[in-house]
Length: 449
Image 1: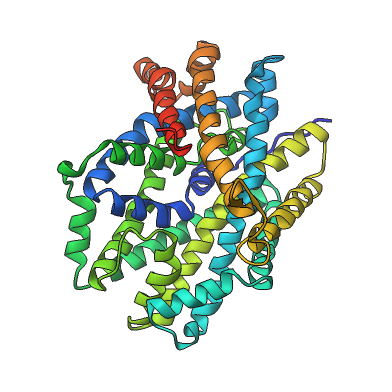
Image 2: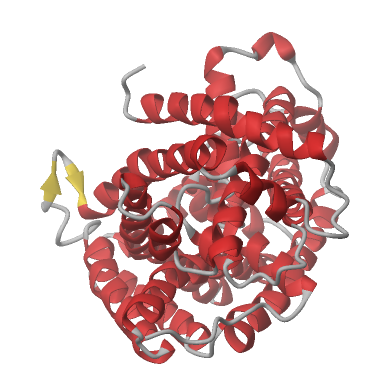
């Protein structure tokens, strides 16, 4: 049973939804963490380099597959390579989407808890040690993390069930500009801090003496993971593109705006941590323990804390919506499910698995596989195995297998301004550079090198 394919209505909708699929919690804490570990400015420059020689070409590859076929991630490969094993990437994408949605929604639920905690001024606790104890008490409890996970996924359902234009596109058009406005407000506040110059120097002044193979690999990984590549959400979203949508330009804008979110997060965080003598390479701890402590020592502490966790909530929501759409599009395309039914199935499974992930910090912490809790297992399998493998398969398929005329016709949309040499550059990156770099990230992620 086939249904008429939905399409994004506006150019703004295309940009907002694709940027929203990439922008997530990783932009807010992974980039500052990676930059903090790898020396700041030099890491930023190397990351930008890999964004445009790995990220943009692989984004284009997913766009080409999705827009050309107008199908979900599984159906697209079945149409382009019938009876051949390339379609495994479709199943990998479906598996990864539900695994990531399940554990990611737990962390997204924490942002809702911390909006509530911020409104209550964290019960008057202001020290990092006190906030650490609060976070541990919350994360290891049984009902509150699971409750917030379910609430967060219910919000996803309300948006997704309304469809592509009225749900995903409409909310993205609201959330993405709002997210950037909040980021800019925080940046202005951070630039007024006493150690703003020191923080900005750390972020923007490269010290190439600190560049090591570890820094290069960290930048490769950040470039790959920050754009949500290898998952299939961009294949799914691009299946809703109109034929006149310029793919290469859209990929470039998406990569640039996604990178801007990460840089703005750095502008927010580094002046604050240098001003208050905190550690910039603290990862998630920075978000849920160190930054709330900083907010508690600032004028208007409750406002800044609430605003920050709303920012994290919006970033989380835009990512989980795109992950859900992979499975929803598959069920509506392949089995003819109504959108509401497909959305209910997807969110229902995520609620079940997400609750188990939430409890894996508490009463189910003893449930382990190879020493990993359910939460960590889902994270490890999806991030270290499925996404890099999916990214390599997509790069090789478009670079070596897909008919070059398809690649050329999709990238050289009339009015796009794309020249033949640009198409050739994208293909070269997909054939040689992207698979090699993603392969290195994959090997290192498994701890083999």
